[in-house]
Image (cartoon, rainbow, N blue to C red):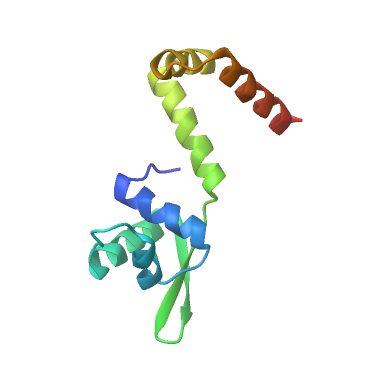
Length: 120
């Protein structure tokens, strides 16, 4: 799966949220300052070329929808992060974030509880 640029990922976040949308609807969701219509339209076309988005014709316009689930992209991104910066060690990544974010033991226990519940 291809990696997204920051702008592409931002558009995808709103498309995942909306599930189906035209360019104007996506722009409405984006924070100020709003990008130009042509800018978002170009990003959508790039996302289509990368296989992340498709569309259906509705009247004279298009409704765009994600082809890649958010969870699928998140999993791939996390794996790339772990492999690229932590030599494939999830333990090293968690240790790094614990040290940098000053996570307490109770917060770590809560995280572990959530992980255990999600895998059962």
